[in-house]
Picture 1 (cartoon, rainbow, N blue to C red):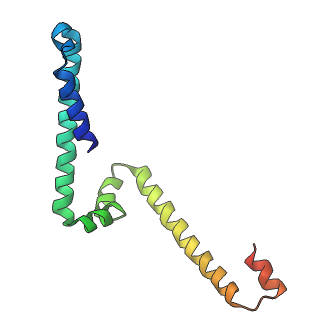
Picture 2 (picture 1 turned 135 degrees about the vertical axis):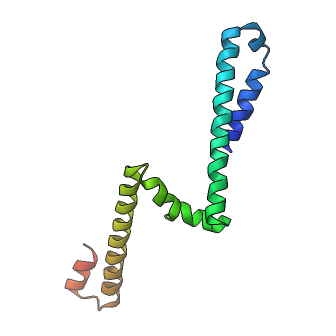
Picture 3 (picture 1 turned 30 degrees about the horizontal axis):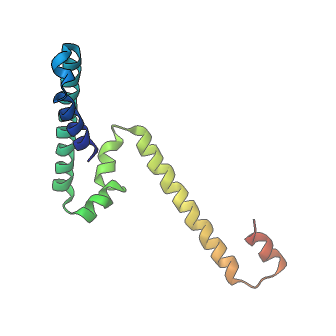
Length: 119
């Protein structure tokens, strides 16, 4: 949607009367328009590829949340791969600690249990 907006803005700029009066401005706006159209085509190509690879809207969301799309971008963006690994590790730690808290909450409320529960 954002690239579509950028294409609309660049088209509107091209129809501005200032483009007829200032050749330098026309050249700059034409270059901007070309770049926005290329960006929109690139984005549309990626969206089409994603729909073909994954299939449905629900699957697209799953793919963006850790499926094959993230895996394919991990070689391009190594920091993304590290962030996903850190997120997964943090999530595992959270689940482990949450189960500990639930275990202590189920026990009788004695001094040592309360101390561990509020650590």
